[in-house]
Length: 483
Ligand code: ATP
Ligand code: MG
Ligand code: MG
Ligand code: MG
Image (cartoon, rainbow, N blue to C red):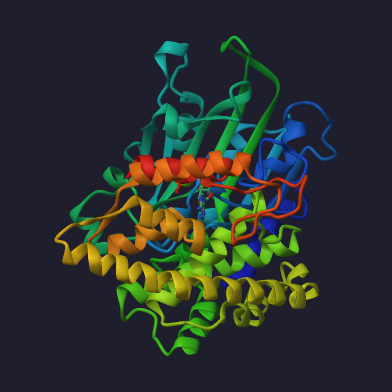
């Protein structure tokens, strides 16, 4: 069985053998792009080449890119831990052609790598193809389909809609159809019951997308029309942890050697065994996932803080602490003690973890301790509020109480809602929002100095004074709307 390390290397060496320059991962934290806080796809670091702003040094490149999907267009945070194949931070394996090869090679090499090199059973693979979009005069991507037909039977080539199979960088700029490779990892018995084709793109945990091949062939102009792109681009991205799951015969990313050492370490710390209790398992997955995110954010220059990107990271860390506190009985700081295990598994590929070990541990430990103090006090209040609410025969807590928890104890509303949900209760969000509005007014009138868990004190710095004020909180609002 190939180890994660061998799989990462095999990808690079395969594309190197096809004339690709292997480049390092760009930092996960982005400091110079107002539209993006974190790298969320392999193509980010090549954006200027794709837009034609800078020439490509190499026409073919490949890499493994650290990605984070917790804000903006891609936000998987709420899935993480609950499902077994979305992470906050993950590695995206990718190969690119800047005005060099196009669909044929991209498809043939993807196939060669998965089937000839890695020996994945072709019977378990599916490819999606853009079905076309009449309002824009876009036709089905028959070209891609014709290349897939050399490898796959027609029944495994599936039409996909604009949402899944047409990629756009933004409102304007390069765009084009894509083909996604999906893999069916169910047992033979299960596969005999329902054809995998019906499960593709249906969020089935074992029939999942592993590789997206994007064919940028158009440029969308400001008036919305499309023109052919002078230098066509291939941009592919494959989920490394998902590939490891497929190759190691597992049905969850967390069962691979990417995560098992950390899961094992968490289990040992809290005296639990992974796989025995659903809630504890979720908590272990959340922590195993989040510790990577936080460690890599720190190495890449983003410490937890009260505003913007730093606040996103703080929220992720606090989510991990909260799960440990509630479901694993961890009332002391412990996440920082997982760093040596993380270094054992990822330090080879990402030596920045080794060189910054002390900083990572120190920052995480301090964050954990500070949040645990607030958490303990806030939990007491919330327990009382919940008991009082139930005693009064109601199933919805007062928005004012939720606001006090938020304002005084640093409980984000989503955290309060999560705890309430587990107790069969909800919160009056209208009242909460009204309180928030009043708070904003007060904040506006207040003197520059404020103290409290969520507030940056110094004048002149961005101040976090409420959820509506930070970039990441568009996400919380989105989350609330969905529910
Ligand atoms: P999904 O539909 O599973 O959310 P996606 O279509 O959003 O994936 P892409 O933007 O196409 O993903 O990214 C390329 C590849 O990166 C995907 O095919 C998948 O293997 C992997 N990937 C995407 N999001 C995640 C994530 N949150 N965690 C782990 N791997 C991911
Ligand atoms: Mg997604
Ligand atoms: Mg998808
Ligand atoms: Mg995709």
